[in-house]
Picture 1 (cartoon, rainbow, N blue to C red):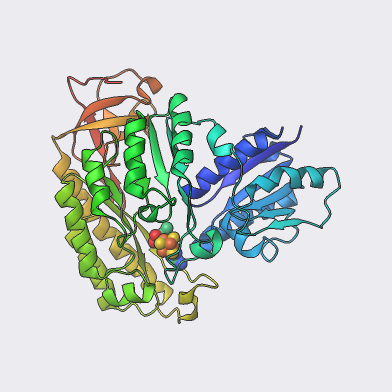
Picture 2 (cartoon, rainbow, N blue to C red):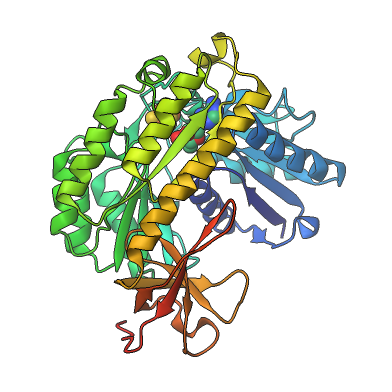
Length: 444
Ligand code: 5AD
Ligand code: SF4
């Protein structure tokens, strides 16, 4: 029996895809190992959203090739290049919609009957036709569910529409079945994934309807979703969250840039003022909502004044958390034709200033949490001290729980009431500490 190892780079979508590939391989008789050194076949699910990410995935597979492993490239880099230009001799490459072909191609390669020198499956017509999502084994208390493929937005900097194709939504029935299967296995939290979940439409149901079905027909403690494009977030979705029992009031709403001029060049479809207005509307319907975001610095043509507009939005909106990036030109995108004219030094400086502002705002939000009570779902233990439980509140805010409770994983998957303590702020990172409330009730 051949042994495989799979490593995942990149976004949550890739994490989900890797789980499916794992399921497909296990059901075809392959055996998973936890160390690449022990494997006959090494698969790398790659990411190409920024150049650095691409390089990491490629280097890993190149090292594996040197060790004599059968190398298989999956994911966005495979879709874009077929692996050919980036890794000499990669054995097999499968684009983002052709994973069901893997077992057969691998068998053919192993028994010497592979007709072509190597297989490259990159046809977007090959939509997934496997039942792996419905059979999949849960690996923890919290799981992702992919509700759609691809993206039609074509933001000028972004490679995703090229690597994941046009937007296609999975039928609601399928998604609900997958969710129920996970629930049966003890999963207490699901996160629905899509590049733009708010434009979900399976021909019959819209996103808020899918949310309503899931909320009604399952008993998860928490249902989350990401990512929301600011232009497509609807009032119906916000109302659905407010009226639901389990959908959490966490909205991940990528800003990308604060300058309306840059937003236009990025083809984001909203202005600075519109973005701010949307966040106000979120807070009107969901006063306690956590708003997180993605922000980029150094897009072509971004002046100091444009960058100041980004800082202004950070100060106005006060995000609970932000993922920050330096713009990286991606071959084939519209923005790659623009002159990458912000110097690396300037980009680095803007990133540092941005992170500082993001942390200041996040810290202010944490201070507002001191003394208030929150429901924490325990997801594991503190990285620094394994005797302390760690988890998140409904709004996705992470924390370590201090106080007297049994050591170890006893609390894993449980919801407990905690009281906010003063956050500890390190120069770059905000680390939140929450205390177990005296009369804590273990409610699950
Ligand atoms: N360069 C830098 N960051 C990018 N992102 C997407 N494309 C690029 C790029 N070319 C960021 C965006 C997106 C997040 C997932 O990655 O902020 O929201
Ligand atoms: Fe890329 Fe824009 Fe689609 Fe997000 S919405 S995946 S940034 S094209």
